[in-house]
Image (cartoon, rainbow, N blue to C red; front, side, top):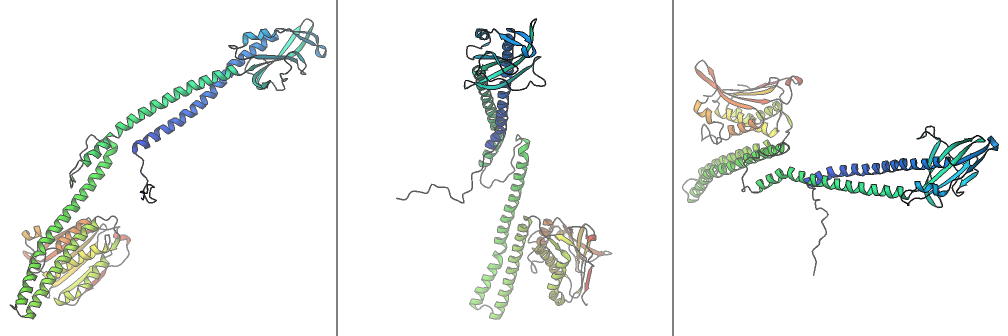
Length: 494
């Protein structure tokens, strides 16, 4: 029997740390480091204070011994005597835990009294001793025990002599170490209690601070499927407002995409149903022999062309919305695109015998080339289709420093006010026999996506309509004056 593999997969993503854990670590780790350093520093300061206090006792012991000294003779002939019973040091021994030992010697190290096992002093008196005496303190060992030693250089004088005595008093460290360990334990206990209080406080504060995040999560989880309404969290802290605003902005974009998708599905199902039904009827009529085969094929071909044009335009309308969601489109020369499109539709212009003229200036626009090609193609197709046979058609592209202004002018009959109000809406063609009503809607969506504007205005000569002007304005990617390209002008023969 095979056992399931409980090992984590190599490509499994690591589980991210929680915000609570990061806050706790971010606060407690520096606090713990600081408390550890503070404890270490406090312990050594305590040892220094203990040494200072007990060193004073050693100095007092040394001075007590110095009072028991006598001398006869002067200089090299001086002879020191000491009558110091060991019991005289018992008064300075603390709690019967430590033991004190002494040694009295001359400057040349000759033992006068005390313990010969205590090594003679070989150091120097500090330049600034801690007390008003010739005293030095150092650590040493005595009988394999660590001791603290005080050295006092004591002048001894009497009526019969004068000399310098070296008095050494050593004390074992049991009391100092016991007291230092007790202080250390007490300090560690207080510091541990402090860390526990800080940890509990931080945990409670983090729990309360992250409560709005959990409430917001519960609010989102409780929403119904498809609910993309803005998040209402007036009581959320200021730090969460940027996240809430960004989430609401994303939801708004999603609502827009869903509305566009629903509209596309609705329009596609509605608009394609008619040509498909017509196509089916024409095929059935041709099969029954109601019309001649050649005529039936022509009618079927016309229906297929209209359905193909409708499908292509609907796909183009959907692609505009797709490109709108993409960030940072490339910079494209609109003048180059416009001349290319004009060359592509030149057969249609020649078929209608139009007097075509085009003038372009350098116009770099931040847009996808497909959008500019679709915009130019739809405007020119619309103008060619509605321009009278043999009339004049002009295209003018100029850069005014901040915008690229494209004007397509024909000499048709113009449009009335009622049609102008709805002409940019999908499937609002002026003549349903010659178009699907999507060309100008595509232009309008492209211009809106690029942050520009488009208007259709009748060009008047006195009180008579002389033609229609389609004017598009798009923001330039940089001032046109920086581009030294010369304008291009082309004119087709009449």
